[in-house]
Length: 121
Image (cartoon, rainbow, N blue to C red; front, side, top):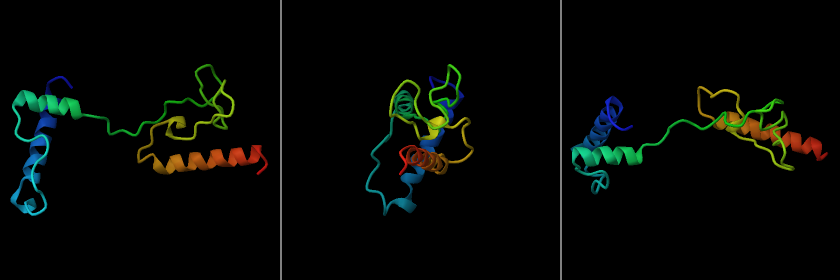
């Protein structure tokens, strides 16, 4: 996000958020503006660049399978590392269209069942 339409659109969003936060309707709930306050255009661009982060839920980074690119097997065991499993959104084959929390819980439950079966618990 060095320049261009994305930076300008993000700047307009920050301006709108500041306008709402500093509005008369919210005055009883807000003591003062902490950040970004009134900044020059260049300083605001730097504020945006320094604060921007992803809103995506990280997932699909640990391939499950049996080929050379796979990191875990179908029981979520990490290849080449004893007694280590990965039981989170990273083993999902595709990015979900919704929040990753519920599918991650199911993945964790499946991992716990696999561990219980293997250890005869």
